[in-house]
Picture 1 (spheres, rainbow, N blue to C red):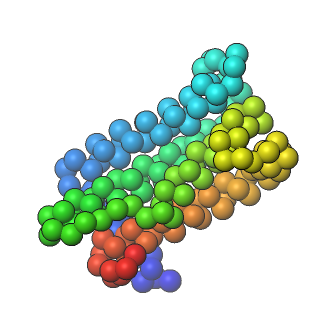
Picture 2: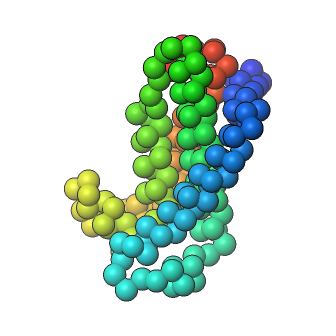
Length: 166
């Protein structure tokens, strides 16, 4: 366990030694936070930014900050890996699991049925699925957080060259 946490910490710390990565992380954090707030504003007719900000509770803001941070960290680490691979002439792409974790982050920030319905409709999920997710949304947020942490851990293993197949 201690070894895994050390790999995770070193993998997270390594990209931030580059002078551009902290700025990239902050820019991505604000972009993700804004998107997570604005997606419901854009998809629900009659919803305004002021109304959306009024709807959110302190717990909702905490979830938004957590998922924005994890998404930003994952993207920053992936960009670092791609730059490192490009320097040695190898090609690298983000993993499907990581992209799935980013979609899960977007889905995890939808806190009302009218916000979640258009997003789920794109994937053919009916209103029953929306109600189910809303009923257990904080369990979903917990699961989404675990998925994103797993994607970050696997990227950290790649950065530390512990695993070449990750």
